[in-house]
Length: 154
Image 1 (cartoon, rainbow, N blue to C red):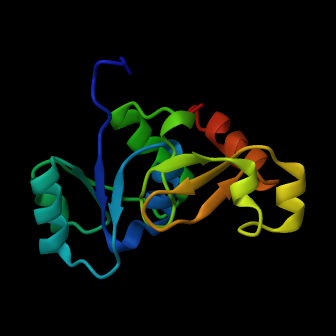
Image 2 (tube, rainbow, N blue to C red):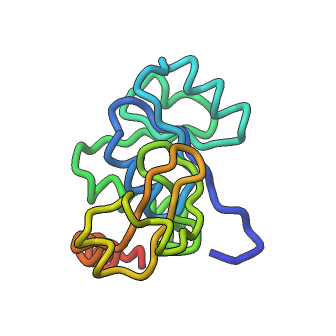
């Protein structure tokens, strides 16, 4: 994907919560709210020029919507990657909980907000500008990156 082409943004329905989380980890702005009905998802997508990703055939009739027919997460990521040219961007990872942007957090400010082991073994931390959740590269990070490589996303 060219640097001057804006990254796609998404609105994801209730049946694709795991996909929403992984899109956020990839660095894509992704609305996901289990309380939103189809009309609210469609309206939010139209208001922000977002693509709708859905398992719902009716909602998939919306302009800019894509029906995700599989329940398998890796297959979902693959079809979305193929359609939108997804690539991992470490600089734009978003909060998996609220979709907020992550900002660098000095190590000393992370003290007390993360487990002692995570604090001792990491030098880089990030904080969500939306909900305040603190992130670091834990042991799970290698698994995440391996999945990205396996799916041709990194």
